[in-house]
Length: 117
Image 1: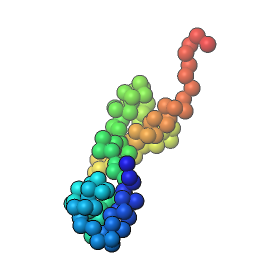
Image 2: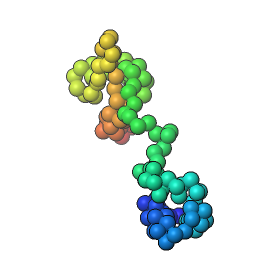
Image 3: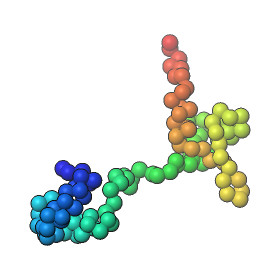
């Protein structure tokens, strides 16, 4: 498969050779609409993002983070106040939230005690 940037360059060079948009589309294996957009600079060459992947760091409530780490909500509040895990205050009520990535980082940094070792 041809990369988007090189495909656009190929379309422009074929256009300079005097080929019609239909001929270019057949040769490059794309739609005539794409050829038209490429010739007029309206194509998007940036990579597509996965729509299932959030484009922001998901915030967890105190109870969601507590359930995830299997601790009490009060423990999460205490850890947030003492800086064990960063917490963020949002909204007019100043509700506490935890970033999912930071909760995962904390979980990854914990040592596992299996009890029998």
